[in-house]
Image 1 (tube, rainbow, N blue to C red):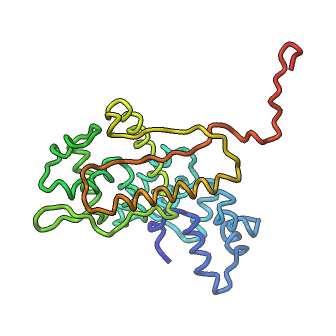
Image 2: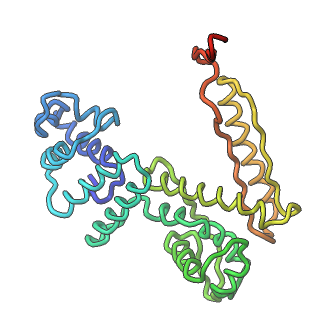
Length: 285
């Protein structure tokens, strides 16, 4: 079983702890009893995401699985992060996790993905740098449509190199690798990806004023949609993304780097619910 610092989700850590011992007759009843719970299925519910651990429960469970020192400190923060609903607090807790792991020379699963999605500049440079041999950070900054500093560019380049998404040849030129960034089921990249969408959404708004109409296409539809049509609409959007990607990859040539946002979200609650919308005013309906 992996050390706790190799996990980005405490429920997966507890699941693996249980499964490793299950072959020897270990049960959820025994696991819960070890942690001081009267319910024989409580930890099963925690692992399935149907129940949470309180601060006291966190200490009980950590003791039951034998965590101490830095591992215990990491587990406490991990539980808080996984159960946190506030995005900003979640990011701060993740930073604390990284500090604990780094101090113990451990790399957290999902770190590379988090760094990649942390700034809109990083995916842009992955596409642009192979076409800009020898360009300095200052020269790169001048080419980008939206303002960025040489420091931000240097940081993004290092992220790409560390993640293996770009490689630097002997001639000093950057080349894309076959390595892909995938969020999968990792929790860490999920909130980083949401940050990326926020950044790109803001850039799209800025582009309305800063990019000439002939160089952009920003449009939208407001639609009345039946609930049963949603799966099909989402499939069509996915297919559209694939078609765009296919057209772009027909030629290895890159003239500019573009971003395409596809946004489809509800503007009302369910209008088919039995809610009575009748408004009474002065005795009139």
